[in-house]
Image (cartoon, rainbow, N blue to C red; front, side):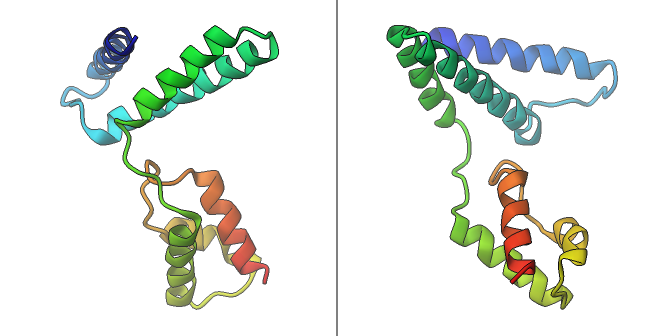
Length: 132
């Protein structure tokens, strides 16, 4: 299962590389290009897992879960909520803002790699800190 999955992921990466070469001749398999492909693969498998689980197809659901765990091994560790909150608080203090109207400014100035934390989670934390 692991080998088949990795071959499939490599194929997706190669496809993205070929697709981008027409637009960006210097496309390389860098983390910033590969990580979104892996995140998309995880999302697809999570959706499949839900479908299989609802249909009572436990074997297929278990396979999807196993594939998710394998893909996650190749992704950087996600930041915890506390780590995100500390980064957001530091940015808010640096910008000296205190109201929700400044949310866009805070989001723009945050220096958190999308691979380390989902934007939705970051947005929720910014909103919660600015509405206090």
